[in-house]
Length: 271
Image (cartoon, rainbow, N blue to C red; front, side, top):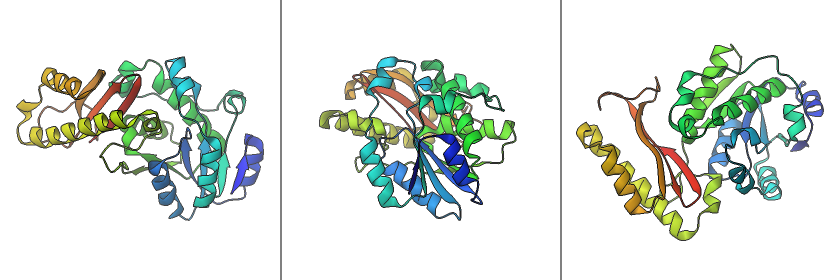
């Protein structure tokens, strides 16, 4: 595994390769990231992982400061996984140049997380666009847990006619059902149990509303989530996963999208 901290040295190295499989991360690596890396290694391309906690996608400075970081542990894990390249850029390395492409932000960015985290997706698309320009990956591996983010990155790539291809990978879950996330390391045992109970409640709810959509009563759902231990609920919505529009009936193929807080920790998922 070769480690790079500036884009010029990285570009010089990867210019010799026929294709790059890219996994963008903010560190705090977990089973979800490991799954993406293993998927990537099945391709004939070289695997490149980035670690960069992007300040522009945090709408609260406190959230940016408290985001889990353990680069030494991450490097040790990536060495074990035998990836080809690790890119750990500085802020200046990523934002110190003007990209040729301006990022495209689809109107669906105003929904769900975009509604509650002002500027979040602008920050995500800005940094992903820059990574794409630096690396020019053949494939980008993204997990379905952050489905709205995945959808917007794919739309940007399509709109700008970028040759990189997004590979969607399934959400990896803990034994208690909750989606693997770097933020989970901020949860104590009691809070993990709350998150697990919320996941199973919503998972069962989806099965019920597939049979009878009138059971999707948002006020009751929010009340139930609070009784299970959620401190605050941003949204619980049903969206068609292809069009990313609210569904009109249970016959459409949909996912239940939700975001909520346990104390100050925000968790998102879709099932």
